Length: 315
Image (cartoon, rainbow, N blue to C red):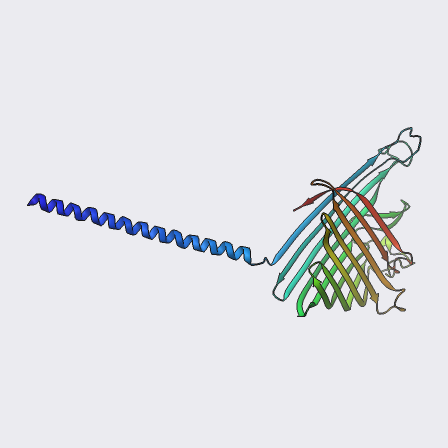
């Protein structure tokens, strides 16, 4: 009888353990399925929902050297290098957009003017590229492809600039331009925008007193370091890969001071295009052209053009 009771107890004990193990396995499987479902949903949400921020950085490095010695066709040796940085940090969600960009560039060149070699002390480096430009445009959807917009634009340069190697014409924050404007932005495509602002303030800064001369080169009177102008502003911006491995960034700007007349001779104009053509994984060719007209500086058209091979770095 005792043996029978012990056997029955043992069977019940084993049965309980088996049932408990089955429950544990069932709970574990259920928990794993729930976790997998949540993970799949999380991945699905991440891939289907567009990101609010779009970030893009590009650094372009360029260098060139040429040397001549007893060369029958003649020639002047030179060494040049430059760097261009362009960063775009754009936010878009529902009716709100906020586009930000940074453009920085700097370059130097040295030419063998005395025929004693590029690195002779009689030859010196000259600036051949220098730019600081910051842009920020906040937009709120008005109707169709139009946005209410507020813009802040800042332009200057890093280093001293000379005319004929002797006459100082610019230095850090001299001049510098700060534009703030309210208006409407037409943006039919992500890569194209037209900003129209009848309410624009532009402040010109010249912190270097040596550049504030009696001839009023930047519209600033002697004894002062800034000049504020109220007027209208138009900016057309285009940035896109137009063909495979061919990228274009172009902008056209107009500013008119309401206090100056007539309209056209006193409208400042700036046009700039930067084209990058990818040669292979490590090299690109670039072409940069810029034309500007600013009657406060002088009445002549300003022109700059550069072309070369570069090493592009994107991150």
